[in-house]
Amino acid sequence: MSSRSSGQGSWVRGRSDRFREMLSGLLSCCLVLLLSDVVVAAEITANKMAILNTEQGKVTVFEDGVSIVDGETRIAASRVEFHDAENRAVISGGVSIVMPGSQATADSAEYLPGSRKTYLYRNVTVSREGFVISGQSLVLDNALDQVLAETDVHVTDAGRGVEIWGGAGVFDLSSEDGTIYGSPRLVLQRASAMTVTGDEMRVHRGRREARTLGHVRVVTGDAVLTCDTLDYFIDEDSARAQGRPVLKQGENTVSGEMMMFHLEEGDLKRINVAGSPKLVQQDGELAGRQVEIRFDKGKLAAIEVIGDSANQPELKQERNKARGDCIAFRFEKGEVQEISMTGKTRGSYLTQDNDRVEVEGRESSVRFRDGKPVLMTVAVVTDGKLFHRIGAKKP
Image (cartoon, rainbow, N blue to C red; front, side):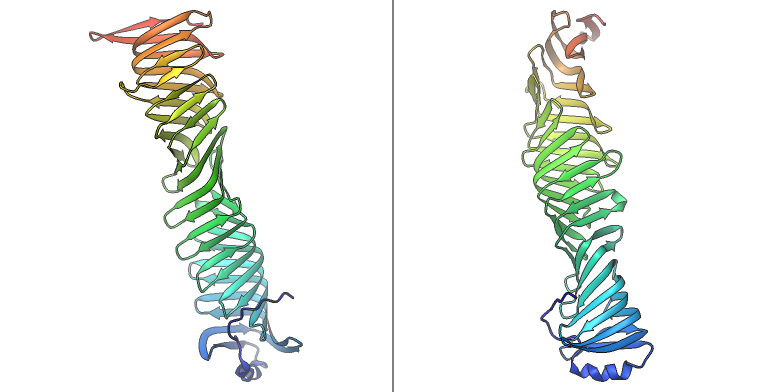
């Protein structure tokens, strides 16, 4: 049997022998715990009790419906062995612990009354209002109201569809704050899965926030985001990426100083990029004042680059050039299907027939097939009248 010494006081001192002699013949046994000459409101009750003399000292064995009550903490199990010399209780047989607002279960446990710590082993869960911490080994620190995980830990928030895995962690039950270390991984399992990894995750359940720090990587559908810091706001179903955020999808790369992610029931719908945003494509790049990216079922659906008349975003490709107050791209299966522009627009395109077409107006729309324009419409507003000019025939 493993041995763990708390080094703090003696749970049952020599004078408790008198209690043992009085209670040894009772069917329902009760042991009052004495700590540092102060009687503590903690007790063990059971239907059976035996006192064993071993080489390591006296061992009191409680069996059949064992209950330990320590203040507002109650521990239930099939068997408890209390080792006097080590001030340690070994608990086995379906361990169940009830604390104010929290519950815990395990196959076995060790209770150190001197430090008020409970070491839980095998199939361990600690739950609080739908928030569940699980693993093969956890430590309950009743003095600090904390849960410590020194090995692999799994955290779930069923109400929000959030799961986190990590190599270690510490959780404060009072504030509902926690930190997960060791390559943590967060998964939002809803309409389409979103996976977040990094060096460290801090969960603030009371504020309904989660922060990921260091080498952050987010994967959803065919889009991948990297950044230094990611804040996820649970109630708003949104996230903020800062520290060199870069989003890649196929041949498209978007960067800026900050990105805001907007979700609906866990499904990524929109990303807004601010702070010198830039869109880089295979054969060109585009910069503006703001970039908005829209998704449909985890797939890239549209990119909109917003500028103004003084600072128009300009598209420069090998075959096509365009500029306007706002330039929008529509995608299907990762390929550009249409480019539309508003404001003072101007464009130069090379069609499938290798004809160069120049367009200018208030609004313009260009549709593509195999990367080449196939249909062009330009709307020009002059003296209150609207004119359309077709720059290429419809296929």
